[in-house]
Image (cartoon, rainbow, N blue to C red; front, side, top):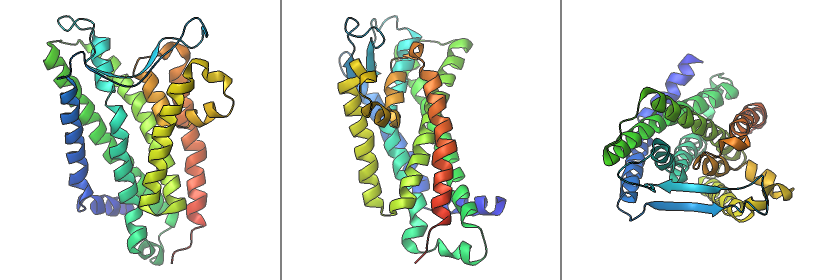
Length: 279
């Protein structure tokens, strides 16, 4: 397994993706910095609840960058909210890396080589998955560290150790959702293999789910079918994390979503890999 992991990492290291992904994250940082230039900050995918019509669903969801009540004395929760807002576009970078790296061997036919040499195709799949997750983890945590540093410098706020630990825990929860999103992408990749179709399906699913959720979230639990579709969507969790709606069981939902991806999506993808026929 170690040799296969090393092989997949070297494929990534010497591919254009190894440089392209950090460049895309850098573009994300520039975009995030541009949010600070907007008067009153930037709001994306925002929907406000009605406390009178549904006491269980109230408040507001969405992504808020540099929306401080008082810019001179910002709260750390507002700073975290601003940093976490980057999840609105980071999934796109993850989608590009996952699709391009995983599907490359299928498109060129080189996926047949390790199998021809007797390497289990499931082992190849796991090696690719681990490399994708680890590279995303490094880029994701570096990105979130830089955004926190930039926002604190921008506002002149000095967080203490407890606040940093809290921020790291929120970033960790968001990353669990990202891992689930990666496993969902990989499952679709195995089924379709065409990068253009996969990208279209995943973008429509992710953005469409966010639009649906903002439209129905005030009476979310009354939609028997749509709510399960939304629960599969990573933006559902990130939009709620964007306003720290933790009091409604969000942490448990994220953990359940992550466990679902490990116990259902991962075994499903393994079954699909075993049944693949290489042409």
